[in-house]
Image: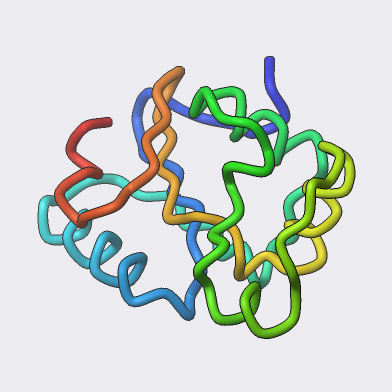
Length: 121
């Protein structure tokens, strides 16, 4: 069992409340009548193990979870060849740079790039 609790009955949506894409995905999911468990990553800090689990579920490396085009990344951080632990620390201390929203349901996980991607779950 992983660090992130999931259910086959509802979608867990990890998102940033500052993200327009996340707001659209959340509104779309509610319009479709989907049961959603909301986790705002700006208010609920992810653990290192949860970040690793998300990366594994998406078949990515933790570094690939970083949106290197996000203004918080481009204005304050520079691209480096960091260790996995360093990428995890960067995401933990700057959650707004994590690619999101991420939808989880049971053993399925989807990086939501358009609001309708939430239906892939």
